[in-house]
Image 1: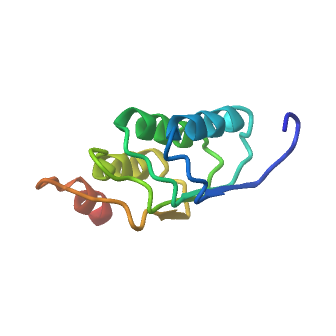
Image 2 (image 1 turned 180 degrees about the vertical axis):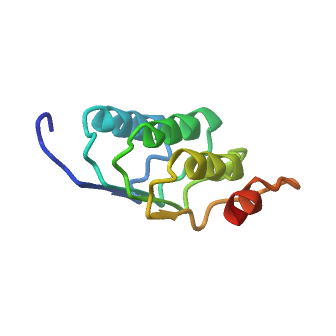
Length: 119
């Protein structure tokens, strides 16, 4: 894939459940030199590990060219999806669209999301 100029990248329902970290490592390696990527989608790939989810979000946050981010039906278990969404919103203000449907959201009384949306 070296030297290829992809604009869109989507991984949907790939059943990384046995080792989701391998899928995330693949994505991170792919993204390293794709500074012109404009759309990323990770949908239906369950992530139950906090470290794996954080690595994925950090890789996404390091791509300033993205204008569409989709992460849907993925975060479960102890993953703090609310904090991850807040990070995406904060670091990707240039995005036209962030789709975060179907993830387990627990705000535990936090107001970061409504505060962000109010600005």
